[in-house]
Amino acid sequence: MSAFINKFGLKSNTADLEKLAQELDKFQADLEKKEGALEVKEKLLVDKEIGIEKEQGQLRTKKEELLEKLQTVNSLSKEQAKKELFDELEKYYANEVAKRIQEAELEVKSTADEKAKEILVDAMRHGATDWVAEYSVSTIRLPDEEIKGRIIGREGRNIKAFEQLTGVEIELDETLDLRISSFDSVRREIARLTLEKLIRDGRIQPDRIEELVAQTKTEIDNILFEEGKKLSYAVGVYNLHPDLIKMLGRYKYRFSYGQNLAIHTLEETKIGMAIANELKADVGVIRLGCLLHDIGKVVTEEEGTHVELGVELLKKYQIPEKVIAVIAEHHEDKPFSCLESVIVWIADAVSAGRPGARYTPHEEYAKRMTHIEDVAKSFPEVEEAAAYQAGREVRVIVKPDQVSDSELIVLTKKIAEKLEEDARWAGQIKVVAIREVRATEIAK
View 1 (cartoon, rainbow, N blue to C red):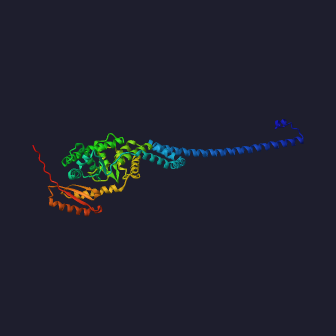
View 2: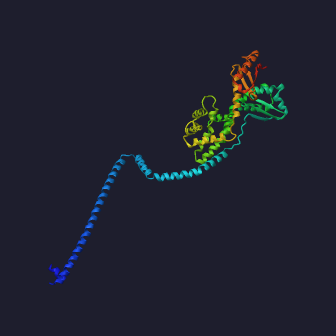
View 3: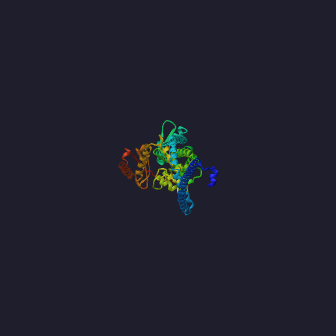
């Protein structure tokens, strides 16, 4: 206290005491002010401490969760952990992904139709072909009037024998053009080849005609093989089994709703390959799938749809499974398993559905003619039967050892009655029955 009094130089008078009292009051106020500030700081420190403890509690909780997840992850395989991670990412980016998908869909919709049209139009342009199919008539230009007369023969015996043996109809007029007419393209081809041989040979008579017709029928396998090779080479397929190539040769003589199967196959293959190139599909599968998709239509020995028959046939020749799947699915009998199946289906529809590709009359015509012949052949005494004049006439060759001349008249009547019952829709039908007996002996 004495130091304090000495410091301020106190004297024993009232004025000094009052001054000292004021200074003491001021000092005390400063102390109280500092004390208040310290209390505020202390409160702030307490609040911070509480906040820190709260954050530490949250961290402990998070740590426990992470530890729990780590324990779960430790029990997962690599693939399971990857799936968990992807699931988390998918949830996190779900909104962004959805937004981008919507944007992509809008962009695709704005251009898809136009692009699809461009691809199909270009593919159809590639499918154009100059392959010619003879639907019902073949024409041969005769060298001169002498050959024309020899083909007709005395009282028409040569041309009659030719028609009976081949099952076709020959049409001649004042020109040198000879027309071979038949709804069956195989018969017409046999007749055409036989006639060409007769013209070259020069010996045009019934016996020689019969000999050459039989010879040509045995050569038909070679004809089918050449036609099949021509078709397969046209689309760039070179390593097929010979049996399959021969089956493809039958396409030339097969029609579906008036559309030649060889032309349809060639068109479809070119269209399918063009689409495959645009869509980066497997052109090899498309090429083979289009070429073989209707091969079941020329399988005549077994029962079933052409899809089923085709699939069973191709399995025997170890055709790739993907190609067989394409063929099995080209009529949507099974769900599409790949892009190539869809392309073959589209190419098939484009070729078959284009204007003028198919029409019903030829199919009905062929059905009517075949039915008339089948009715006539249903009699065991009949050896051969051929329908002419759009089904208005049927010529029947009987087995002479089973039918006598008198019985021939009765058989003809029975055939006509059978046709009246089973083929009323064909109209009036003339039945001509032929019984021919030959005796041959060789002079030595």
